[in-house]
Length: 272
Image 1 (tube, rainbow, N blue to C red):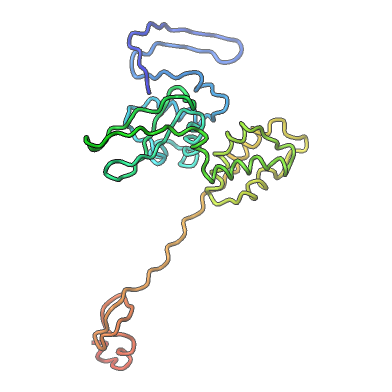
Image 2: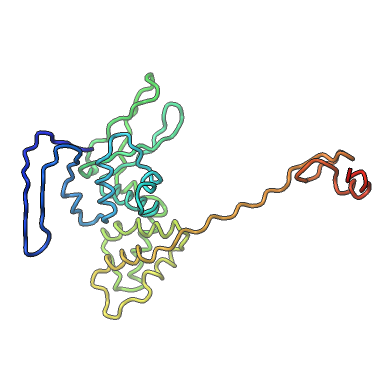
C-alpha cells in the first residue's frame, strides 16, 4: 500500500516560474508515501476522493477505514466520505468485499490499490482464516460495474441520463453520468424523490446556456445537497401488564396494584 525509499538519492529542487505554481522539493528519509500522478492528477475523481485515497494509502495495514471511522477524523461528514469511497471503487483504487468467516460472522474487508485495477487484474490476497483447519477460499474482486450496480445507483444514473429530456442543455456523456451518480445517490439516500432531484437540478437555468453541463451539475449537487431527514420519534411503549391484587385480572399499569374496577369498588382499600 505504501512504499518507502530509505536509500533514495534526492536533492532539494527549487522551481520559480512567472506563471503557475512553483515547487520547493526536499528529500523525505522517513514517514512518506509514494503516490502516482495517475491518482494525484486524476481527471474524473473529486478532490475529496483523491485526498481520501492518499490518506488510505498512507495507513498501516489493518487500520480501520470504515465510513464512521473516517468521518470521526475529518470534517467532510459521512455522506461525502461515502461518496468519495464509491468514486475510488468505481475507478479501481479501492475494493470493499463482504466475507463470511468460518465462525459464520460476516465482515467487510477493504483493499487499497496504489495503482488502479482493471477487470483483468488478479484477485486480492487471501485473508487469514480464524480457523487454521478451514480452507481459504479465493474471493473474486468486485469490478466497478458490480460495485455500482445497486438499485440506488441505477436510479441515480437514470436521473442524470434523463435530464436531457427535461432540458437539452443538460445532455451528459456516459462517463459523466457514472462519475456524478454517487452524488445523486446521496440525494436519494436522504429521501429526495428522483423527479424532485431532476426538478431541482434543472431549475433556474442560466439564459446564456451551460458550457460544461457536467461541471454545472457537479456544483449544484454539492451546493444544494439537502440535510438528512431527522430520525423518526420512537413510538411510546405501552405500560407493562400487571396482575390485579384484588381480582387477579391482567391490566396495564407502570406499577403493581389494583385494576380500575377494583379501585372504584373499594377506593379506601385501593388507597391503602
